[in-house]
Length: 219
Image (cartoon, rainbow, N blue to C red; front, side, top):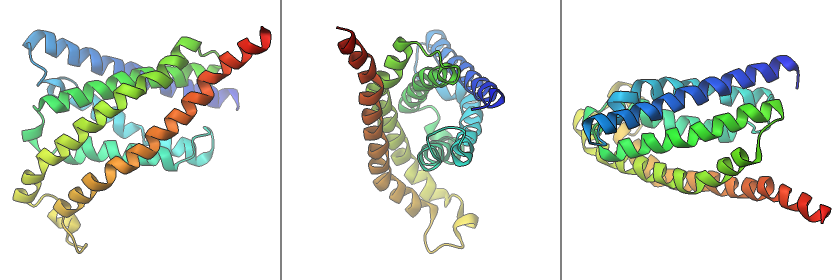
């Protein structure tokens, strides 16, 4: 990897890490000020939407081969979250004050403020073990929490999608409505998520097993 690419990837991941940290601090500040968990989207929704949309770059990184992830897995993650935050939450005010949305956005922020620093330091070849451990351990609780929140918000949005015939013009060229599409997403999403979740467990075994192997060789 060239020095330019390393600097670019470090800068990108550092920016994402900073933005997600600010998002989490905004959510916590809103909670402490208002004594309620309903205000996460109002306090951090715009920044989260921008940074999640910008994560399309990660799909391109994999597609052109400057990172080893490939493009399919990042594409699945990006499209699922971006659809959720822009097409559903951003368009249906009735779900924006849901406690489950606040929990979801907090889980996203927690996960990303671990993931992106890990990527940034890995680019430099100087990632401390404790950060690697957090990266491949924190997801065990954080990711399912986010999934449950996403599914509940999508389910809550269904009546409003049907009532308003949301995205009717776009879906007029298809033999189904956005309401039907969202139901299909609800049914398929957990299975796609599970595939990615199990992949992380495989990576966890690989990444966290190395120090133990090195230690056993030295003994």
